[in-house]
Image (cartoon, rainbow, N blue to C red; front, top):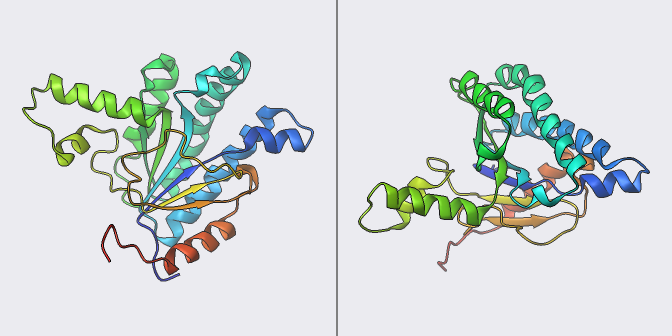
Length: 227
């Protein structure tokens, strides 16, 4: 692979369906998916990816069964506590995007603590989209700009108020599980990203498959509207 994407975004889809096909509870799929997050993050760090943004919990995911949502909140809390040493060992900086005010104070504190404790890291930046929806992000950005008395809007000004301010646009978007849609994910940031859709469920997604997709990315010619 000669051309490593600077910014990879992944829609981690298929945890529940994978578990169901294995005869397991959906929660087992989410636990397995968390392990894959570690593997893919570490791999991206090793091959030179600078930003990895993962769709962990959407603004629409609150509509799932209450018990599953409660499990996901507890899983997130456990994840941050267990992964902090891994972040530090691999020089990975963590950043959250999305409106996390709806989370419990305890989970919010864990998220902010993880950001603070990895702020000095200079390798890969892992971005988790938490209670994130792209339309919600854009509306919040517009309101921030209005409250800041911006006189006019340009792309640069709006971009500076997005959750992803100071993060480059997505070069490569991957969605697992065979679904072919963006699901309200990074709509602004994916304007010129190369998109890849794989039938593999997220719990079965491997660094080797990611490498194959990156090799495909390497062969594509990105023209950004030009010839």
